[in-house]
Image (cartoon, rainbow, N blue to C red; front, side):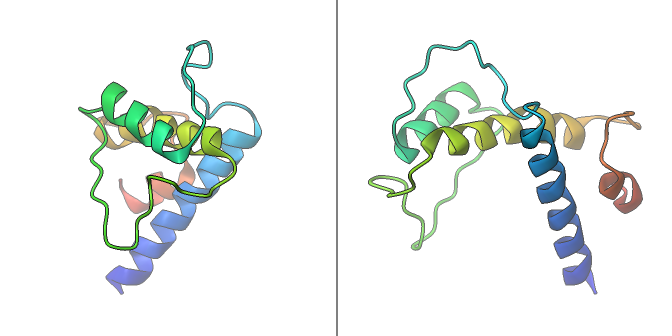
Length: 108
């Protein structure tokens, strides 16, 4: 049963991110002058900027360097969202009015 709960929670966060991204609210630090031209650039910038909030543990299937993904800025936006919004929700104590419903109901 724990597996179902984890999947529901992950799906809830995924939907929350997609909704925030579609409203343009997922991008943090838009005014920054960063050159994100590859997935590797996005990951390296995130490692540098958010080293206290993100931990990268790549497995044998992970491909960061020479990753063919055509939208590396989307990767950067997602990593920023994880390090700011998601991290903030996870580390905050008490309820926050913007917290997604899936988080309230799951007690995260």
